[in-house]
Image 1: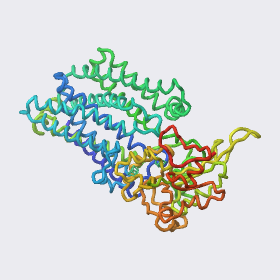
Image 2: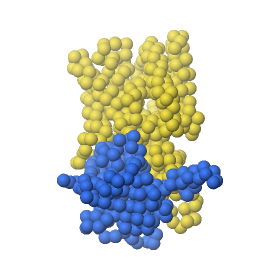
Image 3: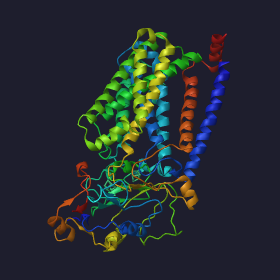
Image 4: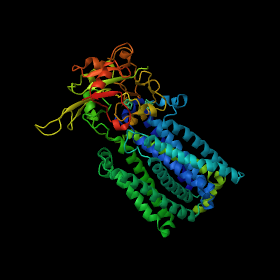
Length: 404
Length: 206
Ligand code: SF4
Ligand code: SF4
Protein backbone atom coordinates (compact mmCIF):
# COMPACT_ATOMS: atom_id res chain seq x y z
CA UNK A 1 0.00 0.00 0.00
CA UNK A 2 2.68 2.45 1.13
CA UNK A 3 4.73 1.72 -1.92
CA UNK A 4 1.81 2.48 -4.14
CA UNK A 5 1.46 5.83 -2.41
CA UNK A 6 5.15 6.46 -2.93
CA UNK A 7 4.99 5.88 -6.66
CA UNK A 8 1.79 7.87 -6.96
CA UNK A 9 3.54 10.83 -5.34
CA UNK A 10 6.58 10.33 -7.52
CA UNK A 11 4.31 10.46 -10.53
CA UNK A 12 2.45 13.59 -9.44
CA UNK A 13 5.63 15.44 -8.52
CA UNK A 14 7.33 14.47 -11.77
CA UNK A 15 4.40 15.77 -13.80
CA UNK A 16 4.44 19.05 -11.87
CA UNK A 17 8.21 19.37 -12.33
CA UNK A 18 7.87 18.88 -16.05
CA UNK A 19 5.09 21.46 -16.20
CA UNK A 20 7.36 23.87 -14.33
CA UNK A 21 10.12 23.20 -16.82
CA UNK A 22 7.65 23.95 -19.58
CA UNK A 23 6.74 27.26 -17.93
CA UNK A 24 10.43 28.13 -17.70
CA UNK A 25 10.98 27.34 -21.37
CA UNK A 26 8.03 29.61 -22.15
CA UNK A 27 9.63 32.34 -20.03
CA UNK A 28 12.98 31.93 -21.76
CA UNK A 29 11.41 32.21 -25.20
CA UNK A 30 9.32 35.28 -24.35
CA UNK A 31 11.51 37.10 -21.87
CA UNK A 32 10.75 38.15 -18.30
CA UNK A 33 7.84 40.20 -19.62
CA UNK A 34 5.69 37.13 -19.00
CA UNK A 35 6.25 37.60 -15.26
CA UNK A 36 4.55 40.21 -13.10
CA UNK A 37 7.84 42.01 -12.47
CA UNK A 38 8.45 45.43 -13.99
CA UNK A 39 10.78 48.36 -13.54
CA UNK A 40 9.69 49.36 -10.03
CA UNK A 41 9.17 45.92 -8.57
CA UNK A 42 12.18 44.31 -10.16
CA UNK A 43 12.21 41.22 -7.99
CA UNK A 44 9.22 39.04 -7.25
CA UNK A 45 8.11 35.57 -6.35
CA UNK A 46 11.41 33.97 -7.38
CA UNK A 47 13.55 36.02 -5.02
CA UNK A 48 10.95 35.63 -2.25
CA UNK A 49 11.21 31.87 -2.67
CA UNK A 50 14.99 32.12 -2.77
CA UNK A 51 15.10 33.88 0.61
CA UNK A 52 12.60 31.44 2.03
CA UNK A 53 14.47 28.34 0.88
CA UNK A 54 17.89 29.53 2.00
CA UNK A 55 16.26 29.99 5.39
CA UNK A 56 14.71 26.55 5.43
CA UNK A 57 18.02 25.06 4.47
CA UNK A 58 20.11 26.91 7.00
CA UNK A 59 17.63 26.36 9.82
CA UNK A 60 17.58 22.59 9.51
CA UNK A 61 21.32 22.22 9.44
CA UNK A 62 21.90 24.60 12.31
CA UNK A 63 19.64 22.53 14.51
CA UNK A 64 21.10 19.21 13.44
CA UNK A 65 24.76 20.17 13.59
CA UNK A 66 24.30 21.72 17.02
CA UNK A 67 23.21 18.25 18.04
CA UNK A 68 26.65 16.96 17.16
CA UNK A 69 28.64 20.00 18.21
CA UNK A 70 27.04 20.48 21.59
CA UNK A 71 26.56 16.77 22.06
CA UNK A 72 22.81 16.65 22.48
CA UNK A 73 22.17 12.97 21.87
CA UNK A 74 18.39 13.32 21.91
CA UNK A 75 18.57 15.45 18.74
CA UNK A 76 20.78 12.97 16.88
CA UNK A 77 17.99 11.12 15.05
CA UNK A 78 17.00 14.40 13.43
CA UNK A 79 20.45 14.98 11.98
CA UNK A 80 20.32 12.95 8.79
CA UNK A 81 16.89 14.06 7.60
CA UNK A 82 17.87 17.63 8.48
CA UNK A 83 21.00 17.62 6.36
CA UNK A 84 19.15 15.98 3.50
CA UNK A 85 16.52 18.69 3.74
CA UNK A 86 19.20 21.35 3.71
CA UNK A 87 20.82 19.98 0.61
CA UNK A 88 17.54 19.83 -1.26
CA UNK A 89 16.41 23.30 -0.15
CA UNK A 90 19.66 24.97 -1.10
CA UNK A 91 19.53 23.36 -4.54
CA UNK A 92 16.00 24.67 -4.95
CA UNK A 93 17.12 28.15 -3.82
CA UNK A 94 19.85 28.14 -6.46
CA UNK A 95 17.30 27.15 -9.09
CA UNK A 96 15.18 30.14 -8.11
CA UNK A 97 18.08 32.52 -8.70
CA UNK A 98 18.67 30.86 -12.03
CA UNK A 99 15.11 31.29 -13.26
CA UNK A 100 15.16 34.93 -12.14
CA UNK A 101 18.04 35.85 -14.45
CA UNK A 102 17.31 37.80 -17.58
CA UNK A 103 20.23 36.10 -19.30
CA UNK A 104 20.47 32.57 -17.90
CA UNK A 105 22.83 31.73 -20.79
CA UNK A 106 25.42 33.99 -19.16
CA UNK A 107 25.24 32.46 -15.69
CA UNK A 108 28.84 31.30 -16.00
CA UNK A 109 29.92 34.95 -15.92
CA UNK A 110 29.46 34.57 -12.18
CA UNK A 111 32.43 32.22 -12.22
CA UNK A 112 34.50 33.71 -15.03
CA UNK A 113 34.29 37.37 -14.03
CA UNK A 114 33.18 37.51 -10.41
CA UNK A 115 33.42 40.79 -8.56
CA UNK A 116 34.13 40.30 -4.91
CA UNK A 117 32.43 43.56 -4.01
CA UNK A 118 29.02 42.12 -4.63
CA UNK A 119 27.06 40.34 -1.89
CA UNK A 120 25.68 38.12 -4.63
CA UNK A 121 29.18 36.77 -5.21
CA UNK A 122 29.61 36.25 -1.48
CA UNK A 123 26.45 34.20 -1.69
CA UNK A 124 27.75 32.14 -4.60
CA UNK A 125 30.91 31.36 -2.64
CA UNK A 126 29.23 30.56 0.65
CA UNK A 127 26.49 28.46 -0.94
CA UNK A 128 29.05 26.40 -2.82
CA UNK A 129 30.99 25.83 0.37
CA UNK A 130 27.83 25.03 2.25
CA UNK A 131 26.59 22.54 -0.31
CA UNK A 132 29.95 20.76 -0.35
CA UNK A 133 30.04 20.56 3.41
CA UNK A 134 26.47 19.33 3.68
CA UNK A 135 27.03 16.63 1.12
CA UNK A 136 30.17 15.49 2.88
CA UNK A 137 28.39 15.52 6.22
CA UNK A 138 25.57 13.46 4.78
CA UNK A 139 28.06 11.01 3.35
CA UNK A 140 29.91 10.70 6.65
CA UNK A 141 26.73 10.05 8.59
CA UNK A 142 25.87 7.28 6.19
CA UNK A 143 29.14 5.47 6.87
CA UNK A 144 28.72 3.31 9.94
CA UNK A 145 32.45 3.32 10.71
CA UNK A 146 32.78 7.13 10.83
CA UNK A 147 34.29 8.20 14.08
CA UNK A 148 32.48 10.62 16.36
CA UNK A 149 35.44 13.02 16.25
CA UNK A 150 35.41 13.39 12.47
CA UNK A 151 31.68 13.96 12.49
CA UNK A 152 32.05 16.63 15.09
CA UNK A 153 34.66 18.51 13.07
CA UNK A 154 32.43 18.61 10.01
CA UNK A 155 29.44 19.63 12.10
CA UNK A 156 31.50 22.35 13.74
CA UNK A 157 32.31 23.72 10.28
CA UNK A 158 28.77 23.31 8.99
CA UNK A 159 27.23 25.28 11.85
CA UNK A 160 28.90 28.65 11.23
CA UNK A 161 28.66 28.15 7.47
CA UNK A 162 24.92 27.70 7.77
CA UNK A 163 24.60 30.84 9.86
CA UNK A 164 26.73 32.71 7.34
CA UNK A 165 24.71 31.44 4.39
CA UNK A 166 21.66 33.09 5.72
CA UNK A 167 23.44 36.21 6.91
CA UNK A 168 24.95 36.72 3.48
CA UNK A 169 21.52 36.31 1.97
CA UNK A 170 20.28 38.98 4.37
CA UNK A 171 23.16 41.26 3.40
CA UNK A 172 22.16 41.05 -0.26
CA UNK A 173 19.24 43.14 0.90
CA UNK A 174 20.38 44.75 4.12
CA UNK A 175 23.37 46.58 2.66
CA UNK A 176 21.26 48.56 0.21
CA UNK A 177 21.16 52.23 1.12
CA UNK A 178 18.51 52.75 -1.54
CA UNK A 179 15.95 50.59 0.27
CA UNK A 180 14.90 52.02 3.61
CA UNK A 181 13.13 48.95 4.99
CA UNK A 182 16.02 46.65 4.13
CA UNK A 183 18.84 48.87 5.21
CA UNK A 184 19.13 47.77 8.81
CA UNK A 185 21.80 46.13 10.90
CA UNK A 186 19.13 43.90 12.37
CA UNK A 187 18.34 42.31 9.03
CA UNK A 188 20.94 39.53 9.25
CA UNK A 189 19.98 38.43 12.78
CA UNK A 190 16.34 38.64 11.77
CA UNK A 191 17.01 36.39 8.78
CA UNK A 192 18.93 33.92 10.87
CA UNK A 193 16.22 33.55 13.48
CA UNK A 194 13.54 33.23 10.78
CA UNK A 195 15.72 30.59 9.23
CA UNK A 196 15.90 28.79 12.54
CA UNK A 197 12.19 28.74 13.21
CA UNK A 198 11.05 27.96 9.67
CA UNK A 199 13.83 25.43 9.15
CA UNK A 200 13.08 23.67 12.38
CA UNK A 201 9.36 23.73 11.66
CA UNK A 202 9.88 22.15 8.26
CA UNK A 203 12.20 19.58 9.79
CA UNK A 204 9.46 18.68 12.27
CA UNK A 205 7.00 18.25 9.43
CA UNK A 206 9.41 16.07 7.51
CA UNK A 207 10.17 13.97 10.56
CA UNK A 208 6.45 13.50 11.10
CA UNK A 209 6.04 12.48 7.47
CA UNK A 210 8.96 10.08 7.58
CA UNK A 211 7.66 8.60 10.80
CA UNK A 212 4.23 8.05 9.27
CA UNK A 213 5.74 6.50 6.14
CA UNK A 214 7.59 4.02 8.31
CA UNK A 215 10.95 4.63 6.66
CA UNK A 216 12.46 6.34 9.58
CA UNK A 217 11.32 5.95 13.13
CA UNK A 218 11.39 8.99 15.35
CA UNK A 219 10.83 8.93 19.05
CA UNK A 220 7.77 10.82 20.23
CA UNK A 221 9.77 12.71 22.83
CA UNK A 222 11.88 14.27 20.07
CA UNK A 223 8.81 16.06 18.75
CA UNK A 224 8.02 17.57 22.09
CA UNK A 225 11.64 18.66 22.70
CA UNK A 226 11.98 20.20 19.26
CA UNK A 227 8.53 21.76 19.67
CA UNK A 228 9.78 23.50 22.80
CA UNK A 229 12.82 24.83 20.96
CA UNK A 230 10.53 26.03 18.19
CA UNK A 231 8.42 28.01 20.66
CA UNK A 232 11.50 29.82 21.92
CA UNK A 233 12.66 30.62 18.40
CA UNK A 234 9.25 31.99 17.43
CA UNK A 235 9.36 34.31 20.43
CA UNK A 236 12.80 35.60 19.46
CA UNK A 237 11.64 36.12 15.89
CA UNK A 238 8.63 38.20 16.96
CA UNK A 239 10.82 40.17 19.34
CA UNK A 240 13.19 41.10 16.50
CA UNK A 241 10.35 42.15 14.24
CA UNK A 242 8.86 44.23 17.04
CA UNK A 243 12.18 45.91 17.75
CA UNK A 244 12.67 46.68 14.06
CA UNK A 245 9.20 48.15 13.61
CA UNK A 246 9.39 50.16 16.83
CA UNK A 247 12.71 51.66 15.79
CA UNK A 248 11.03 52.87 12.61
CA UNK A 249 7.79 53.98 14.23
CA UNK A 250 9.08 55.96 17.17
CA UNK A 251 11.00 58.70 15.32
CA UNK A 252 8.23 58.60 12.67
CA UNK A 253 10.60 59.91 10.05
CA UNK A 254 8.40 60.92 7.15
CA UNK A 255 10.03 58.95 4.37
CA UNK A 256 10.45 55.74 6.31
CA UNK A 257 6.85 55.97 7.49
CA UNK A 258 5.63 55.68 3.90
CA UNK A 259 7.21 52.25 3.79
CA UNK A 260 6.23 51.20 7.29
CA UNK A 261 2.63 52.21 6.65
CA UNK A 262 2.59 49.77 3.76
CA UNK A 263 3.10 47.06 6.33
CA UNK A 264 0.88 48.34 9.08
CA UNK A 265 -2.12 49.39 7.04
CA UNK A 266 -1.22 49.33 3.35
CA UNK A 267 -1.18 46.67 0.69
CA UNK A 268 1.26 44.51 2.62
CA UNK A 269 -0.76 44.53 5.84
CA UNK A 270 -2.31 41.09 5.24
CA UNK A 271 1.16 39.60 4.96
CA UNK A 272 2.58 41.49 7.90
CA UNK A 273 -0.26 40.86 10.32
CA UNK A 274 -0.71 37.38 8.90
CA UNK A 275 2.85 36.59 9.81
CA UNK A 276 2.39 37.94 13.32
CA UNK A 277 -0.75 35.86 13.74
CA UNK A 278 1.00 32.77 12.38
CA UNK A 279 3.71 33.28 14.96
CA UNK A 280 1.47 33.95 17.92
CA UNK A 281 -0.87 30.97 17.36
CA UNK A 282 1.86 28.33 17.08
CA UNK A 283 3.63 29.89 20.04
CA UNK A 284 0.50 29.58 22.16
CA UNK A 285 0.10 26.01 20.97
CA UNK A 286 3.65 24.98 21.72
CA UNK A 287 4.13 26.73 24.98
CA UNK A 288 2.08 24.09 26.82
CA UNK A 289 3.82 20.83 27.50
CA UNK A 290 0.63 18.81 27.12
CA UNK A 291 0.22 20.15 23.58
CA UNK A 292 3.81 19.43 22.72
CA UNK A 293 3.25 15.82 23.55
CA UNK A 294 0.77 15.45 20.70
CA UNK A 295 2.76 15.12 17.47
CA UNK A 296 -0.32 16.13 15.50
CA UNK A 297 -0.50 19.49 17.25
CA UNK A 298 3.23 20.03 16.91
CA UNK A 299 2.81 19.34 13.21
CA UNK A 300 -0.01 21.87 12.96
CA UNK A 301 2.05 24.51 14.75
CA UNK A 302 5.03 23.77 12.54
CA UNK A 303 3.04 24.17 9.34
CA UNK A 304 1.67 27.50 10.57
CA UNK A 305 5.22 28.66 11.27
CA UNK A 306 6.40 27.69 7.79
CA UNK A 307 3.52 29.58 6.17
CA UNK A 308 4.08 32.54 8.48
CA UNK A 309 7.73 32.82 7.57
CA UNK A 310 6.82 32.69 3.89
CA UNK A 311 4.49 35.64 4.47
CA UNK A 312 7.35 37.40 6.20
CA UNK A 313 9.59 36.91 3.17
CA UNK A 314 6.87 38.52 1.09
CA UNK A 315 6.53 41.65 3.19
CA UNK A 316 10.27 41.91 3.65
CA UNK A 317 10.94 41.86 -0.07
CA UNK A 318 8.13 44.08 -1.28
CA UNK A 319 8.07 46.66 1.49
CA UNK A 320 11.30 48.03 0.06
CA UNK A 321 10.48 47.70 -3.61
CA UNK A 322 6.98 49.12 -3.94
CA UNK A 323 7.78 52.80 -3.45
CA UNK A 324 10.48 54.64 -5.44
CA UNK A 325 12.50 57.05 -3.33
CA UNK A 326 11.81 59.88 -5.77
CA UNK A 327 8.06 60.16 -5.35
CA UNK A 328 7.33 62.48 -8.27
CA UNK A 329 4.92 62.01 -11.14
CA UNK A 330 4.78 60.42 -13.63
CA UNK A 331 7.20 58.08 -11.90
CA UNK A 332 9.08 55.28 -13.58
CA UNK A 333 8.53 53.77 -17.05
CA UNK A 334 7.44 50.25 -16.28
CA UNK A 335 9.10 48.69 -19.27
CA UNK A 336 6.60 46.65 -21.21
CA UNK A 337 4.99 47.67 -24.43
CA UNK A 338 2.88 45.64 -26.77
CA UNK A 339 1.95 46.50 -30.29
CA UNK A 340 -0.70 46.81 -31.77
CA UNK A 341 -2.37 49.02 -29.18
CA UNK A 342 -5.28 46.65 -28.75
CA UNK A 343 -2.88 44.31 -27.03
CA UNK A 344 -1.37 47.22 -25.22
CA UNK A 345 -4.59 48.23 -23.56
CA UNK A 346 -5.59 44.68 -22.91
CA UNK A 347 -2.48 43.59 -21.07
CA UNK A 348 -0.66 46.70 -20.06
CA UNK A 349 -3.02 49.54 -19.35
CA UNK A 350 -0.33 51.62 -17.62
CA UNK A 351 3.06 52.50 -19.02
CA UNK A 352 4.25 54.57 -16.05
CA UNK A 353 4.03 53.91 -12.35
CA UNK A 354 4.35 56.18 -9.36
CA UNK A 355 4.35 53.15 -7.09
CA UNK A 356 4.93 49.51 -7.90
CA UNK A 357 2.37 46.82 -8.41
CA UNK A 358 3.06 43.13 -8.49
CA UNK A 359 1.00 40.02 -8.99
CA UNK A 360 2.74 36.84 -10.01
CA UNK A 361 1.62 35.53 -13.38
CA UNK A 362 0.76 31.93 -14.10
CA UNK A 363 4.23 31.45 -15.56
CA UNK A 364 5.85 32.43 -12.29
CA UNK A 365 3.44 30.32 -10.31
CA UNK A 366 4.07 27.41 -12.67
CA UNK A 367 7.81 27.68 -12.25
CA UNK A 368 7.38 28.11 -8.50
CA UNK A 369 5.29 24.95 -8.20
CA UNK A 370 7.63 23.15 -10.57
CA UNK A 371 10.72 23.86 -8.49
CA UNK A 372 8.97 22.90 -5.28
CA UNK A 373 7.71 19.69 -6.89
CA UNK A 374 11.20 18.94 -8.12
CA UNK A 375 12.56 19.51 -4.62
CA UNK A 376 9.92 17.22 -3.16
CA UNK A 377 10.78 14.58 -5.73
CA UNK A 378 14.45 14.81 -5.00
CA UNK A 379 13.83 14.59 -1.29
CA UNK A 380 11.58 11.54 -1.58
CA UNK A 381 14.01 9.66 -3.76
CA UNK A 382 17.00 10.52 -1.61
CA UNK A 383 15.17 9.91 1.64
CA UNK A 384 14.14 6.48 0.46
CA UNK A 385 17.64 5.66 -0.64
CA UNK A 386 19.43 7.04 2.38
CA UNK A 387 17.07 6.98 5.33
CA UNK A 388 14.84 3.98 4.76
CA UNK A 389 16.17 0.93 6.56
CA UNK A 390 18.03 -1.65 4.51
CA UNK A 391 17.41 -2.44 0.86
CA UNK A 392 14.17 -1.35 -0.80
CA UNK A 393 12.94 -4.92 -0.49
CA UNK A 394 13.43 -4.98 3.23
CA UNK A 395 11.88 -1.60 3.71
CA UNK A 396 8.88 -2.85 1.81
CA UNK A 397 8.65 -5.63 4.30
CA UNK A 398 8.84 -3.17 7.15
CA UNK A 399 6.11 -0.95 5.81
CA UNK A 400 3.89 -3.93 5.04
CA UNK A 401 4.45 -5.10 8.54
CA UNK A 402 3.35 -1.74 9.82
CA UNK A 403 0.21 -1.52 7.78
CA UNK A 404 -1.02 -4.98 8.51
CA UNK B 1 44.18 65.06 -13.36
CA UNK B 2 41.64 62.49 -14.47
CA UNK B 3 38.37 63.72 -15.84
CA UNK B 4 35.18 63.60 -13.86
CA UNK B 5 32.30 64.21 -16.18
CA UNK B 6 29.24 65.79 -14.67
CA UNK B 7 26.11 67.63 -15.55
CA UNK B 8 24.47 70.73 -14.19
CA UNK B 9 20.76 71.26 -14.73
CA UNK B 10 19.33 74.72 -14.11
CA UNK B 11 15.90 74.16 -12.58
CA UNK B 12 15.11 77.85 -13.01
CA UNK B 13 15.46 77.45 -16.76
CA UNK B 14 13.77 74.07 -17.22
CA UNK B 15 10.30 74.48 -18.75
CA UNK B 16 9.23 70.84 -18.49
CA UNK B 17 8.96 70.27 -22.24
CA UNK B 18 10.37 66.70 -22.19
CA UNK B 19 12.60 67.44 -25.18
CA UNK B 20 15.60 65.97 -23.39
CA UNK B 21 13.70 62.74 -22.68
CA UNK B 22 12.78 62.32 -26.34
CA UNK B 23 16.20 63.43 -27.60
CA UNK B 24 17.79 60.80 -25.36
CA UNK B 25 15.44 58.14 -26.60
CA UNK B 26 16.30 58.89 -30.23
CA UNK B 27 20.02 59.27 -29.79
CA UNK B 28 20.45 56.13 -27.71
CA UNK B 29 18.01 53.89 -29.53
CA UNK B 30 15.95 53.35 -26.36
CA UNK B 31 13.09 50.93 -27.10
CA UNK B 32 9.38 51.46 -26.44
CA UNK B 33 8.32 51.32 -22.84
CA UNK B 34 11.70 52.48 -21.55
CA UNK B 35 13.30 55.86 -20.89
CA UNK B 36 16.84 56.67 -19.80
CA UNK B 37 15.84 60.23 -19.06
CA UNK B 38 12.50 61.44 -17.77
CA UNK B 39 11.07 64.73 -16.57
CA UNK B 40 9.30 64.57 -13.24
CA UNK B 41 6.92 67.14 -11.80
CA UNK B 42 7.78 68.28 -8.31
CA UNK B 43 4.48 69.46 -6.93
CA UNK B 44 1.10 67.78 -7.20
CA UNK B 45 0.15 64.15 -7.60
CA UNK B 46 0.35 63.95 -11.39
CA UNK B 47 2.35 65.06 -14.40
CA UNK B 48 2.22 68.88 -14.77
CA UNK B 49 -0.05 69.23 -11.74
CA UNK B 50 1.02 71.98 -9.32
CA UNK B 51 1.00 71.79 -5.57
CA UNK B 52 -1.44 73.81 -3.46
CA UNK B 53 -4.73 75.42 -4.40
CA UNK B 54 -5.36 78.29 -6.75
CA UNK B 55 -3.96 80.93 -6.69
CA UNK B 56 -1.25 79.73 -4.31
CA UNK B 57 0.37 77.24 -6.63
CA UNK B 58 3.85 75.89 -6.91
CA UNK B 59 5.37 73.64 -9.51
CA UNK B 60 8.83 72.66 -10.57
CA UNK B 61 10.21 70.23 -13.12
CA UNK B 62 12.93 67.77 -12.31
CA UNK B 63 14.66 65.97 -15.16
CA UNK B 64 16.14 62.70 -13.89
CA UNK B 65 18.49 60.23 -15.52
CA UNK B 66 21.41 58.26 -14.11
CA UNK B 67 23.23 60.50 -11.64
CA UNK B 68 26.62 58.89 -12.38
CA UNK B 69 27.17 58.66 -8.66
CA UNK B 70 30.71 58.96 -7.38
CA UNK B 71 29.93 56.43 -4.67
CA UNK B 72 27.72 54.34 -6.91
CA UNK B 73 25.74 51.59 -5.18
CA UNK B 74 24.94 49.95 -8.51
CA UNK B 75 28.64 49.49 -9.27
CA UNK B 76 29.24 47.88 -5.90
CA UNK B 77 26.54 45.25 -6.20
CA UNK B 78 26.99 44.09 -9.78
CA UNK B 79 28.21 40.50 -9.35
CA UNK B 80 29.95 40.26 -12.72
CA UNK B 81 31.40 43.74 -13.07
CA UNK B 82 29.06 44.58 -15.96
CA UNK B 83 28.39 47.96 -14.35
CA UNK B 84 31.58 49.90 -13.78
CA UNK B 85 32.98 53.35 -13.17
CA UNK B 86 35.03 54.37 -16.18
CA UNK B 87 38.26 56.44 -15.91
CA UNK B 88 36.37 59.57 -16.96
CA UNK B 89 34.04 59.30 -13.99
CA UNK B 90 31.05 57.89 -15.81
CA UNK B 91 29.07 54.85 -14.69
CA UNK B 92 28.77 52.58 -17.72
CA UNK B 93 27.40 49.13 -18.48
CA UNK B 94 29.01 46.34 -20.46
CA UNK B 95 25.85 44.97 -22.08
CA UNK B 96 27.57 41.82 -23.25
CA UNK B 97 28.43 40.82 -19.74
CA UNK B 98 25.23 41.68 -17.82
CA UNK B 99 23.46 38.54 -16.62
CA UNK B 100 20.17 40.32 -15.99
CA UNK B 101 20.01 39.73 -12.25
CA UNK B 102 18.63 43.27 -11.71
CA UNK B 103 20.53 43.64 -8.47
CA UNK B 104 21.74 47.05 -9.62
CA UNK B 105 18.13 48.16 -10.06
CA UNK B 106 17.34 47.51 -6.43
CA UNK B 107 20.59 49.24 -5.46
CA UNK B 108 19.93 52.46 -7.35
CA UNK B 109 18.08 55.01 -5.19
CA UNK B 110 16.91 56.98 -8.23
CA UNK B 111 15.23 54.23 -10.26
CA UNK B 112 17.50 55.36 -13.07
CA UNK B 113 17.91 51.88 -14.50
CA UNK B 114 15.45 50.12 -16.76
CA UNK B 115 15.30 46.51 -17.81
CA UNK B 116 14.61 44.89 -21.17
CA UNK B 117 11.72 42.76 -19.99
CA UNK B 118 10.73 41.98 -23.56
CA UNK B 119 12.34 41.81 -26.98
CA UNK B 120 13.23 45.49 -27.60
CA UNK B 121 10.39 46.96 -29.63
CA UNK B 122 10.92 50.03 -31.77
CA UNK B 123 8.27 52.02 -33.59
CA UNK B 124 9.01 52.57 -36.46
CA UNK B 125 10.43 49.11 -36.89
CA UNK B 126 14.08 50.00 -37.20
CA UNK B 127 16.87 51.27 -34.98
CA UNK B 128 16.80 55.05 -34.69
CA UNK B 129 19.84 55.50 -32.48
CA UNK B 130 23.02 57.11 -33.70
CA UNK B 131 26.12 55.25 -34.71
CA UNK B 132 28.26 53.77 -31.98
CA UNK B 133 25.42 53.27 -29.50
CA UNK B 134 25.88 49.83 -27.95
CA UNK B 135 23.30 47.18 -28.81
CA UNK B 136 21.14 45.97 -25.93
CA UNK B 137 19.39 42.65 -26.08
CA UNK B 138 16.43 41.33 -24.19
CA UNK B 139 17.24 40.46 -20.58
CA UNK B 140 19.80 43.15 -19.78
CA UNK B 141 19.65 46.38 -17.81
CA UNK B 142 20.27 49.71 -19.49
CA UNK B 143 20.64 53.37 -18.54
CA UNK B 144 22.10 56.77 -19.43
CA UNK B 145 25.78 56.79 -20.41
CA UNK B 146 26.18 60.59 -20.71
CA UNK B 147 26.03 59.78 -24.46
CA UNK B 148 29.39 58.07 -24.42
CA UNK B 149 29.42 57.76 -28.22
CA UNK B 150 29.14 61.56 -28.65
CA UNK B 151 31.29 62.66 -25.73
CA UNK B 152 34.19 60.37 -26.64
CA UNK B 153 34.11 61.92 -30.11
CA UNK B 154 34.46 65.37 -28.61
CA UNK B 155 30.77 66.26 -28.41
CA UNK B 156 28.26 66.65 -25.63
CA UNK B 157 25.25 64.57 -24.54
CA UNK B 158 22.31 64.95 -26.91
CA UNK B 159 19.94 66.19 -24.18
CA UNK B 160 22.31 69.11 -23.60
CA UNK B 161 22.33 69.90 -27.32
CA UNK B 162 18.56 69.69 -27.65
CA UNK B 163 17.33 71.47 -24.52
CA UNK B 164 15.50 74.52 -25.92
CA UNK B 165 15.77 76.39 -22.62
CA UNK B 166 19.52 75.79 -22.40
CA UNK B 167 19.00 74.41 -18.92
CA UNK B 168 21.62 71.66 -19.24
CA UNK B 169 25.39 72.04 -19.09
CA UNK B 170 27.91 69.24 -19.37
CA UNK B 171 31.60 69.18 -18.59
CA UNK B 172 34.52 68.10 -16.45
CA UNK B 173 33.90 68.69 -12.74
CA UNK B 174 37.63 68.34 -12.05
CA UNK B 175 38.49 71.23 -14.35
CA UNK B 176 37.95 74.52 -12.48
CA UNK B 177 37.73 76.38 -15.79
CA UNK B 178 34.82 74.33 -17.13
CA UNK B 179 31.38 75.86 -17.32
CA UNK B 180 29.92 73.30 -14.91
CA UNK B 181 32.56 74.08 -12.30
CA UNK B 182 31.98 77.81 -12.71
CA UNK B 183 28.20 77.43 -12.31
CA UNK B 184 28.63 75.31 -9.20
CA UNK B 185 30.88 77.98 -7.70
CA UNK B 186 28.52 80.79 -8.47
CA UNK B 187 25.11 79.36 -7.71
CA UNK B 188 23.54 77.23 -5.00
CA UNK B 189 23.11 73.68 -6.16
CA UNK B 190 21.43 70.57 -4.84
CA UNK B 191 21.94 66.90 -5.54
CA UNK B 192 19.16 64.34 -5.34
CA UNK B 193 18.75 62.30 -2.14
CA UNK B 194 21.97 63.66 -0.74
CA UNK B 195 21.35 61.79 2.52
CA UNK B 196 21.92 58.48 0.69
CA UNK B 197 25.58 59.35 0.38
CA UNK B 198 25.87 58.41 -3.28
CA UNK B 199 27.51 61.73 -4.26
CA UNK B 200 25.82 62.21 -7.64
CA UNK B 201 27.72 63.93 -10.42
CA UNK B 202 24.52 65.56 -11.63
CA UNK B 203 23.76 68.87 -9.92
CA UNK B 204 20.57 70.90 -9.91
CA UNK B 205 20.77 74.68 -9.73
CA UNK B 206 18.06 76.61 -8.04
S1 SF4 C 1 21.98 57.02 -10.43
FE1 SF4 C 1 21.63 54.87 -10.07
S2 SF4 C 1 22.39 53.87 -11.90
FE2 SF4 C 1 23.25 55.93 -11.91
S3 SF4 C 1 25.24 55.71 -10.90
FE3 SF4 C 1 23.78 56.28 -9.30
S4 SF4 C 1 23.09 54.33 -8.47
FE4 SF4 C 1 24.07 53.88 -10.43
S1 SF4 D 1 21.54 43.28 -13.96
FE1 SF4 D 1 23.46 43.29 -15.13
S2 SF4 D 1 24.43 45.25 -14.67
FE2 SF4 D 1 22.84 44.93 -13.13
S3 SF4 D 1 23.85 43.94 -11.39
FE3 SF4 D 1 23.05 42.28 -12.66
S4 SF4 D 1 24.71 41.77 -14.06
FE4 SF4 D 1 25.22 43.79 -13.18
